Length: 467
Image (cartoon, rainbow, N blue to C red; front, side, top):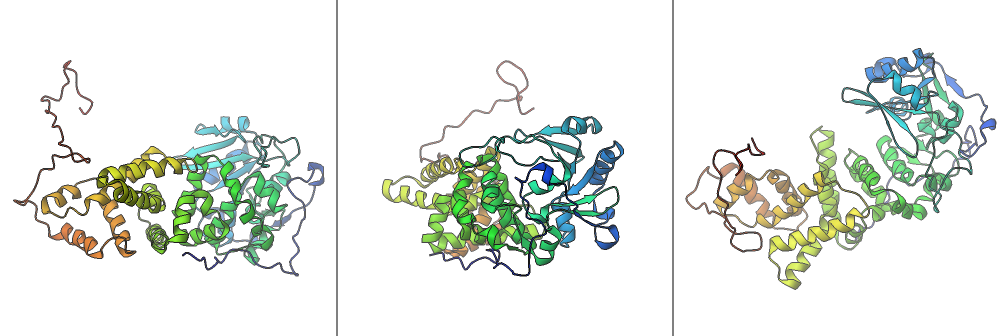
């Protein structure tokens, strides 16, 4: 049975010598937010324009030259100050979206709850947002407190207090290259703390995804979640059920397709968040060491590939996360109903994916390869040279083979089976007299052969779709 040892970011005890620089919250009236922030001049911080991407600099300078305020904000500032190379750069400005769009030919406006400008330069997208206004009772909310409509603009100060964590509310001013800090983010960076701005429970209710972000950023930076910010998470984990499934798909990718995948998994389990994302897998991991070992090993391999800058497919990741319930249902159908292996696997996949889609929307471009990886597991028992060669030509063979090795490592299948397929890829001859033509469908019935048309044209004489 899984017994989490407790991740390093579960929250630390409050320190008597630490008093936040400001006690304002996102609900503080705008007129109160007329305060002088800390400004750290260029000579006293490590952020240099050479560390910013050309796209970020062009966005900042275009807005500045057009007469608007422009700041780099969020993860770009935070990561540089923490000694990490940032992956992306966000910009905050007092220009409204309809004022930003004419400045950039490649600008696209997205979002309903709050309109955001995506400024594209080649493959890089600079997310540009207008300063947000302070939260008020006039904001449209659902019954859980989640904000539904938020297209109200404000000032730099109100925008700072609308950010989620203090370390994300640091601004780099392109005019004089100073860092602007309203919320004590620099102090929390020094103390290696993840602290919510405002009342933690209110902030999580406004956007429950902040609970996932707290875990991800804490593990990415090796920080602690401040005790007051950590305490409500387990109580409010169920609020993730209010988040659109498509948004949760992206958040899971950020959490578990990363170098900190294992640490994030442990933290999600500790706070009860993993149970909200993958309830069936969570129950099986609690009850069966093999299931927990399989998920942990798959995530460790994913983290290693990310570390080595090797490609990682979301199909493989989600296939591993949902494999425990698929395997249990597959074995039940085989044992209780006597189904053929291929049919049982297909039905198990259908059932588990249908339930999972209610929590996380997995696009077909990933769910279809997942099904293929699962279905190929039933064919690895076929160890004749002819069938093996044919299986190795399948486009998902490599992913399915890696999947098989994970199963062998945790004891789901005989390790000798994985070794046989490892050796087969090296030693199997190009051709063999024993090669067998598989003329049966997955359910065991004879497969009807199609007559191949000649000339690449259909009955009407027009070119076929493959020409």
